Image (cartoon, rainbow, N blue to C red; front, side, top):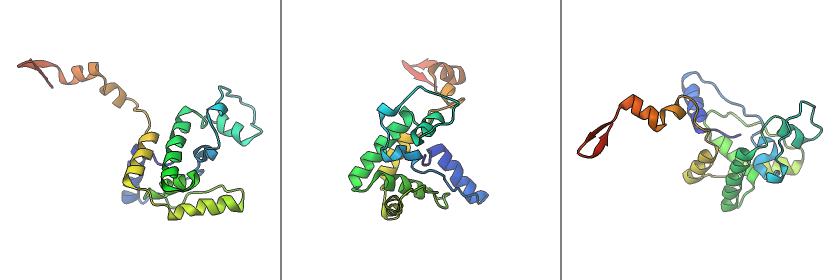
Length: 168
């Protein structure tokens, strides 16, 4: 999947300090970001067997899920607004990340390769990038998830009332 804000910040810092670059594999999320899959394709199956189809592989490794489809929806909305394909938006989104050297595209046909290369002319606005980044932002993990809770806030900062206002 394209850059996640927290990961993006780490990548940017790494590139500046350590000169680490990223070569993302499957910037289209195995076809998920292209709109190839829908909610009808979701399955609870988590088989250890080798999948016989691309969809089976994507599902069995956990990439075909509600969250991925929600991100794909936003990619589709941005593509429609810009009059380009979903693939072009997803790849352009990847290319905006300064740590990315080049995404590894997996086009199976000349038409797919040409479509993917069309991403080079796509210009995403700050508003588009914000929507894409928001849609793909990971859920908070510990300790952020814990510290953001009211009980933890009270334990950390205490609670005093001064003139009817709670001060922290």
